[in-house]
Image 1 (cartoon, helix red, strand yellow):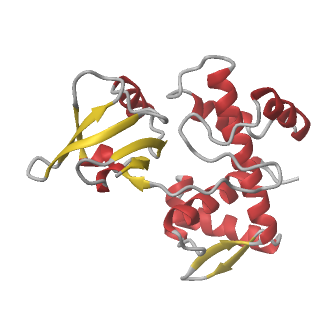
Image 2 (cartoon, helix red, strand yellow):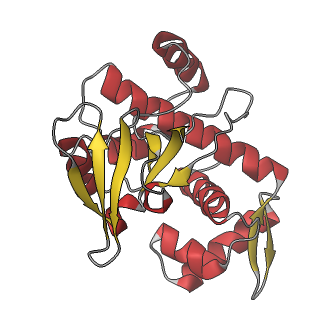
Image 3 (tube, one colour):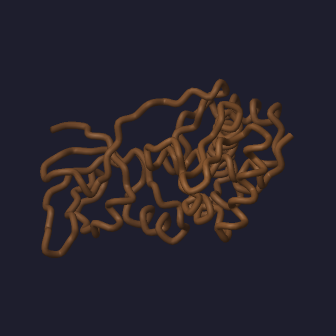
Length: 223
């Protein structure tokens, strides 16, 4: 059975590859994601390669084998189901749950996880809007785009908040920028580098900087 450190490496490689759209992840990005020096990351990756969990090519990077990817996806499933459980059942704030899930995902058995999944009604996304893989490792495919790239007059619905930093999540919640929120871009101010948003549940528009808008992924609801 993989250690928690091994599981964390595989999960981060999978997430980084999925975010970039490239199968092979440079070692510098692995070290950054794991918050370790490059030498430590390289030593760990070489060990994972010997165990058949990754394919490692010096000066190029690392990719997951089929076995490594299976473990990574199951860890993501654990993490995101636990986050959903912490919010929907225990009432925890969505800005607090990421670190708690990081610890719990290594401790809960597959049997308990199946009960949690059934109890929750088999959710397909977590509180941040991230996809929860099915028990067989399948993903619900969605076409998402950054809010920063949406044109004026376009109606959208927030599908995912990429940044899980607690401070940003508290800001998003206070501003009404939660998954499921519907809005329309009423003005793009290039000189001020911001957007003016008309949110369905709010009486007055809000202004959002492009940096924050880049962290919010949306689905179009109308032209």
